[in-house]
Image (tube, rainbow, N blue to C red):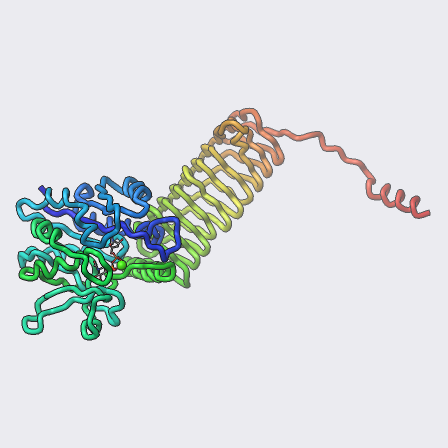
Length: 466
Ligand code: UD1
Ligand code: CA
């Protein structure tokens, strides 16, 4: 049995965010803060089913989000009586992990920078010292509202955590702070929790008071980077977290051989980019997007949940849930919508929209074209202004176009319809019937030419003036 479980405190409402959403669902780089914490816990090797989230304010919303992330447990804290009281709600899980020296990690749901490396390094120290509690601390100067780590004057060992509101002037000067993350021996935490009292300035049951109860076997693990303590109470602080996270993630990509020039390149946490790809300004890449090497992405581009090959150029492109193979060039002003696959060497020019379609290798859609619900072969040429009429008001229908077909300018393709290999549609045609392979389809009214029209017009005008 895995002897590590985790409790994440997420019952707070975060009134200062002024949001309809609970604080832990406020996002940093498009991912709820709680999501960052859950991913760190997962990366630390703790199984989802051994993670219990304490919910309170907006419990239903938080539970819905958790369901989308994994198989987590939740414990409802009906009344918000402090961090110690919150942990008590998960007593059932603590008991499951109290035999054979099981340990519990306690984290705050609103501290998105806590990482798996810190969690595991603290766990190793916790085990090697056989401690009852190991508090993850950080150096923060000035220490602000954080709880202060108090040490014994003689031994320098951890003696207590004092909340800012309860500090003496001397204690306020301490710069080692409590991150709000701890490893406990589950059994010892179960022993300590019922002894907590709410006789402090906030009238709450502080989890931090367990340190004094377990002081004989209490350690600290100081994090390498104080960033792990950061959380956000209002939108301005959330903005700051977003900026810091953007910088941190972009730095990771520089190290991996990605170039980013200019400003406003925002990359989501799970995005993967191969080396020698260049990202240009005003580009947002998010979701489960993967980008190959040698690509030029941006400027002014948004990509979400796309798989992109090597040497792809996307300039002013919006692409969602699509697959884009090697050497595709698209832009400017292109919308690639869900369910689209662009095969190798596809060329897409300005003002083109493609939805739920397969576009074969080497096909060109150079200008002002809408292709929806279509299967297009290889090396097809689309003239300017081609439109698939894929929707009859009730249902969507498919358009099928064979290899090497030539679709003339301003062709309307009324789906369901098929254009065979090597077929041509004449400019301006509305194609409502299948076109066989190799054929030319023309659908146009008779051209009517009136000779001397201009001369006649001049004469008429002159007569009027006389
Ligand atoms: C807490 C610590 C403080 C530490 C800081 C780090 C205590 C008493 N203090 O202070 O030492 O420096 O975190 O950020 O623990 N929560 C619940 N239920 C409750 C109360 C809180 O779920 O009844 C949750 C909150 O939603 C939040 C977390 O616990 O995610 C921390 O609570 P918060 O009130 O923000 O504690 P701090 O005052 O910041
Ligand atoms: Ca806090």
